[in-house]
Image 1 (cartoon, rainbow, N blue to C red):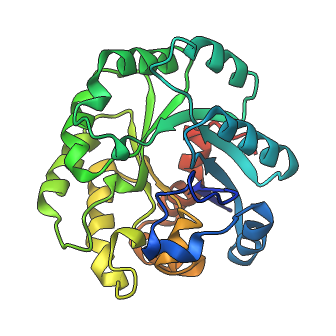
Image 2 (cartoon, rainbow, N blue to C red; image 1 turned 180 degrees about the vertical axis):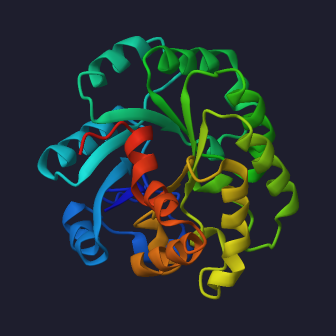
Amino acid sequence: MIIDSHQHFWIFEKEKHAWIDDNMANIRRDFLPMDLEPIYNENKVGGCIAVQADQTLKENDFLLDLASKHDFIKGIIGWVDLRSERLHHDLDIYGQFPIVKGYRHVVQAEIDPLFLLRKEFLEGIGELQNRGLIYEILVFPHQLPSVLEFVRLFPHITFVLDHMGKPYIKSGYIQAWKLLMKELGKVENVHCKISGVITEADYRNWTVPDLLPYLEVALESFGTKRILYGSDWPVCLVAGNYGKVLELAKEFANELSENEQQDFYHNNAGRIYNLKN
Protein backbone atom coordinates (compact mmCIF):
# COMPACT_ATOMS: atom_id res chain seq x y z
CA MET A 1 0.00 0.00 0.00
CA ILE A 2 1.23 3.50 -0.85
CA ILE A 3 1.02 6.38 1.61
CA ASP A 4 1.05 9.77 -0.10
CA SER A 5 2.95 11.93 2.37
CA HIS A 6 2.06 15.29 0.82
CA GLN A 7 -1.17 16.58 -0.70
CA HIS A 8 -3.58 19.47 -0.20
CA PHE A 9 -7.29 20.25 -0.12
CA TRP A 10 -8.88 23.64 -0.56
CA ILE A 11 -12.03 25.53 -1.40
CA PHE A 12 -10.65 28.09 -3.80
CA GLU A 13 -10.74 31.75 -2.85
CA LYS A 14 -8.94 34.27 -5.05
CA GLU A 15 -7.36 36.30 -2.25
CA LYS A 16 -6.56 33.41 0.07
CA HIS A 17 -4.93 31.43 -2.71
CA ALA A 18 -3.21 34.33 -4.45
CA TRP A 19 -0.06 32.19 -4.77
CA ILE A 20 -1.84 30.34 -7.57
CA ASP A 21 -0.70 32.59 -10.39
CA ASP A 22 -1.76 32.72 -14.04
CA ASN A 23 0.65 29.93 -14.96
CA MET A 24 -1.26 27.70 -12.55
CA ALA A 25 -4.74 28.76 -13.63
CA ASN A 26 -5.97 25.19 -14.06
CA ILE A 27 -5.92 24.65 -10.27
CA ARG A 28 -7.99 27.74 -9.51
CA ARG A 29 -10.90 25.64 -8.31
CA ASP A 30 -11.95 23.50 -5.38
CA PHE A 31 -10.06 20.29 -4.60
CA LEU A 32 -11.68 18.02 -2.04
CA PRO A 33 -11.52 14.36 -0.95
CA MET A 34 -14.16 13.26 -3.42
CA ASP A 35 -11.84 14.47 -6.20
CA LEU A 36 -8.83 12.61 -4.83
CA GLU A 37 -10.32 9.32 -3.67
CA PRO A 38 -10.94 7.83 -7.16
CA ILE A 39 -7.40 8.80 -8.16
CA TYR A 40 -6.07 6.97 -5.12
CA ASN A 41 -8.21 3.92 -5.89
CA GLU A 42 -6.91 3.86 -9.47
CA ASN A 43 -3.28 4.10 -8.34
CA LYS A 44 -3.51 1.84 -5.28
CA VAL A 45 -2.80 4.59 -2.78
CA GLY A 46 -4.15 3.68 0.64
CA GLY A 47 -3.82 6.91 2.56
CA CYS A 48 -2.33 10.37 2.76
CA ILE A 49 -0.99 13.16 4.89
CA ALA A 50 -3.04 16.33 4.28
CA VAL A 51 -0.82 19.42 4.49
CA GLN A 52 -1.95 22.97 5.17
CA ALA A 53 -2.34 25.32 2.22
CA ASP A 54 -3.47 28.37 4.22
CA GLN A 55 -1.84 29.96 7.26
CA THR A 56 -4.87 30.21 9.55
CA LEU A 57 -6.20 28.18 12.44
CA LYS A 58 -9.37 27.71 10.39
CA GLU A 59 -7.26 25.60 8.03
CA ASN A 60 -6.72 23.09 10.84
CA ASP A 61 -10.46 22.94 11.50
CA PHE A 62 -11.13 22.47 7.77
CA LEU A 63 -8.69 19.56 7.51
CA LEU A 64 -9.95 17.98 10.75
CA ASP A 65 -13.51 18.08 9.40
CA LEU A 66 -12.44 16.41 6.16
CA ALA A 67 -10.46 13.76 8.04
CA SER A 68 -13.46 12.95 10.23
CA LYS A 69 -15.41 12.04 7.07
CA HIS A 70 -12.70 10.33 4.99
CA ASP A 71 -10.65 7.50 6.48
CA PHE A 72 -7.94 7.67 3.83
CA ILE A 73 -6.69 10.93 5.43
CA LYS A 74 -4.27 9.37 7.92
CA GLY A 75 -2.55 12.49 9.23
CA ILE A 76 -2.60 16.28 9.14
CA ILE A 77 0.21 18.83 9.04
CA GLY A 78 -1.46 22.04 10.12
CA TRP A 79 -0.48 25.61 10.90
CA VAL A 80 -0.10 27.62 14.08
CA ASP A 81 1.66 30.92 14.60
CA LEU A 82 4.84 29.68 16.24
CA ARG A 83 5.69 33.24 17.34
CA SER A 84 2.36 33.90 19.04
CA GLU A 85 1.75 34.39 22.75
CA ARG A 86 -1.25 32.09 22.23
CA LEU A 87 0.90 29.24 20.96
CA HIS A 88 0.53 27.04 24.04
CA HIS A 89 -3.23 27.52 23.97
CA ASP A 90 -3.50 26.72 20.27
CA LEU A 91 -1.31 23.63 20.59
CA ASP A 92 -3.43 22.45 23.53
CA ILE A 93 -6.58 22.80 21.41
CA TYR A 94 -5.25 20.81 18.45
CA GLY A 95 -3.35 18.43 20.71
CA GLN A 96 -6.74 16.86 21.45
CA PHE A 97 -6.64 15.36 17.95
CA PRO A 98 -3.99 12.66 17.47
CA ILE A 99 -4.40 12.90 13.69
CA VAL A 100 -2.65 16.31 13.83
CA LYS A 101 0.94 15.16 13.54
CA GLY A 102 2.68 18.52 13.34
CA TYR A 103 2.85 21.92 11.71
CA ARG A 104 4.60 23.95 9.04
CA HIS A 105 5.08 27.58 8.08
CA VAL A 106 5.44 28.81 4.50
CA VAL A 107 8.98 30.04 5.06
CA GLN A 108 9.60 30.20 1.31
CA ALA A 109 7.38 33.30 1.28
CA GLU A 110 9.27 35.10 4.04
CA ILE A 111 11.55 37.96 2.95
CA ASP A 112 13.74 37.77 6.05
CA PRO A 113 16.64 35.42 5.15
CA LEU A 114 17.06 34.54 8.84
CA PHE A 115 13.36 34.02 9.57
CA LEU A 116 13.95 30.48 10.85
CA LEU A 117 16.60 31.70 13.29
CA ARG A 118 14.65 34.50 14.98
CA LYS A 119 14.19 34.08 18.74
CA GLU A 120 10.38 33.89 18.80
CA PHE A 121 10.27 31.31 16.04
CA LEU A 122 12.94 29.18 17.71
CA GLU A 123 10.97 29.25 20.95
CA GLY A 124 7.93 27.99 19.07
CA ILE A 125 9.90 25.13 17.53
CA GLY A 126 11.18 24.30 21.00
CA GLU A 127 7.59 23.90 22.15
CA LEU A 128 6.85 21.54 19.24
CA GLN A 129 9.92 19.53 20.23
CA ASN A 130 8.72 19.36 23.84
CA ARG A 131 5.37 18.00 22.66
CA GLY A 132 6.77 15.43 20.26
CA LEU A 133 5.31 17.15 17.19
CA ILE A 134 6.74 17.25 13.66
CA TYR A 135 7.88 20.42 11.93
CA GLU A 136 7.85 20.46 8.14
CA ILE A 137 10.29 22.76 6.36
CA LEU A 138 9.10 24.58 3.21
CA VAL A 139 11.88 26.67 1.70
CA PHE A 140 13.66 27.55 -1.52
CA PRO A 141 17.27 26.47 -2.11
CA HIS A 142 18.69 29.90 -1.25
CA GLN A 143 17.22 29.45 2.25
CA LEU A 144 18.92 26.10 2.88
CA PRO A 145 21.97 27.62 4.65
CA SER A 146 19.66 28.94 7.39
CA VAL A 147 17.86 25.57 7.45
CA LEU A 148 21.18 23.87 8.14
CA GLU A 149 21.85 26.16 11.12
CA PHE A 150 18.23 25.79 12.26
CA VAL A 151 17.94 22.00 12.36
CA ARG A 152 21.17 21.61 14.31
CA LEU A 153 19.58 23.51 17.20
CA PHE A 154 16.86 20.86 17.72
CA PRO A 155 18.22 17.31 17.83
CA HIS A 156 15.08 15.82 19.39
CA ILE A 157 12.36 16.93 16.98
CA THR A 158 11.36 15.23 13.74
CA PHE A 159 11.95 17.53 10.78
CA VAL A 160 10.61 16.81 7.30
CA LEU A 161 11.94 18.78 4.33
CA ASP A 162 9.16 19.36 1.82
CA HIS A 163 9.75 18.96 -1.91
CA MET A 164 13.49 18.27 -1.57
CA GLY A 165 14.06 21.94 -0.81
CA LYS A 166 12.54 22.92 -4.18
CA PRO A 167 15.65 22.73 -6.38
CA TYR A 168 15.87 25.10 -9.35
CA ILE A 169 15.29 22.33 -11.88
CA LYS A 170 13.88 24.52 -14.63
CA SER A 171 17.08 26.58 -14.62
CA GLY A 172 19.26 23.49 -14.50
CA TYR A 173 21.06 24.38 -11.28
CA ILE A 174 22.10 21.45 -9.12
CA GLN A 175 25.60 21.76 -7.62
CA ALA A 176 25.09 24.27 -4.77
CA TRP A 177 21.76 22.68 -3.83
CA LYS A 178 23.43 19.25 -3.88
CA LEU A 179 26.16 20.36 -1.46
CA LEU A 180 23.60 21.74 0.97
CA MET A 181 21.38 18.66 0.70
CA LYS A 182 24.32 16.41 1.54
CA GLU A 183 25.11 18.51 4.62
CA LEU A 184 21.46 18.52 5.65
CA GLY A 185 21.33 14.75 5.23
CA LYS A 186 24.01 14.40 7.91
CA VAL A 187 21.51 15.69 10.48
CA GLU A 188 19.83 12.43 11.46
CA ASN A 189 16.47 13.83 12.56
CA VAL A 190 15.81 15.45 9.17
CA HIS A 191 13.75 13.52 6.60
CA CYS A 192 13.02 14.40 2.97
CA LYS A 193 9.90 14.20 0.86
CA ILE A 194 10.39 13.14 -2.75
CA SER A 195 7.55 15.43 -3.78
CA GLY A 196 6.75 18.60 -5.68
CA VAL A 197 9.43 17.82 -8.25
CA ILE A 198 7.65 18.21 -11.58
CA THR A 199 6.44 21.70 -10.67
CA GLU A 200 10.04 22.86 -10.18
CA ALA A 201 10.81 21.79 -13.76
CA ASP A 202 9.51 23.18 -17.04
CA TYR A 203 5.78 22.49 -16.72
CA ARG A 204 5.32 21.45 -20.33
CA ASN A 205 8.65 19.99 -21.37
CA TRP A 206 10.08 18.03 -18.42
CA THR A 207 11.14 14.43 -18.87
CA VAL A 208 11.87 11.71 -16.33
CA PRO A 209 15.62 11.68 -17.20
CA ASP A 210 15.72 15.45 -16.51
CA LEU A 211 14.46 14.90 -12.98
CA LEU A 212 16.10 11.67 -11.85
CA PRO A 213 19.49 13.28 -11.00
CA TYR A 214 17.74 15.48 -8.43
CA LEU A 215 15.92 12.53 -6.86
CA GLU A 216 19.18 10.62 -6.72
CA VAL A 217 20.78 13.48 -4.75
CA ALA A 218 17.98 13.19 -2.18
CA LEU A 219 18.55 9.44 -1.95
CA GLU A 220 22.32 9.84 -1.57
CA SER A 221 21.84 12.52 1.07
CA PHE A 222 19.14 10.95 3.24
CA GLY A 223 19.27 7.22 2.53
CA THR A 224 16.35 4.86 2.10
CA LYS A 225 15.05 5.19 5.69
CA ARG A 226 14.52 8.96 5.55
CA ILE A 227 12.83 9.56 2.19
CA LEU A 228 9.07 9.56 1.61
CA TYR A 229 6.87 9.47 -1.47
CA GLY A 230 4.58 12.49 -1.92
CA SER A 231 2.49 13.69 -4.86
CA ASP A 232 1.85 17.36 -4.02
CA TRP A 233 -1.63 16.91 -5.51
CA PRO A 234 -3.36 19.04 -6.76
CA VAL A 235 -0.42 21.41 -7.32
CA CYS A 236 1.18 18.70 -9.48
CA LEU A 237 -1.65 19.13 -11.99
CA VAL A 238 -0.04 22.27 -13.38
CA ALA A 239 2.76 20.11 -14.79
CA GLY A 240 1.10 16.76 -15.37
CA ASN A 241 -1.20 14.43 -13.48
CA TYR A 242 -1.10 11.97 -10.60
CA GLY A 243 -0.13 9.08 -12.86
CA LYS A 244 2.91 10.98 -14.15
CA VAL A 245 4.06 11.78 -10.61
CA LEU A 246 3.78 8.12 -9.66
CA GLU A 247 5.53 7.08 -12.87
CA LEU A 248 8.48 9.30 -11.93
CA ALA A 249 8.55 7.86 -8.41
CA LYS A 250 8.48 4.29 -9.72
CA GLU A 251 11.30 4.97 -12.18
CA PHE A 252 13.34 6.35 -9.29
CA ALA A 253 12.43 3.46 -6.97
CA ASN A 254 13.37 0.79 -9.52
CA GLU A 255 16.96 1.00 -8.30
CA LEU A 256 15.87 0.17 -4.74
CA SER A 257 15.40 -3.29 -3.27
CA GLU A 258 11.88 -4.54 -2.55
CA ASN A 259 12.25 -3.72 1.16
CA GLU A 260 13.63 -0.28 0.38
CA GLN A 261 10.70 0.40 -1.93
CA GLN A 262 8.32 -0.52 0.89
CA ASP A 263 10.13 1.97 3.11
CA PHE A 264 9.90 4.70 0.48
CA TYR A 265 6.24 4.20 -0.37
CA HIS A 266 4.83 3.23 3.00
CA ASN A 267 6.95 2.27 6.00
CA ASN A 268 8.86 5.50 6.46
CA ALA A 269 5.66 7.56 6.44
CA GLY A 270 4.05 5.14 8.88
CA ARG A 271 6.99 5.47 11.28
CA ILE A 272 7.61 9.21 10.93
CA TYR A 273 3.96 10.18 11.27
CA ASN A 274 3.12 7.41 13.75
CA LEU A 275 0.26 6.13 11.62
CA LYS A 276 -1.93 3.49 13.23
CA ASN A 277 -3.30 1.87 10.09
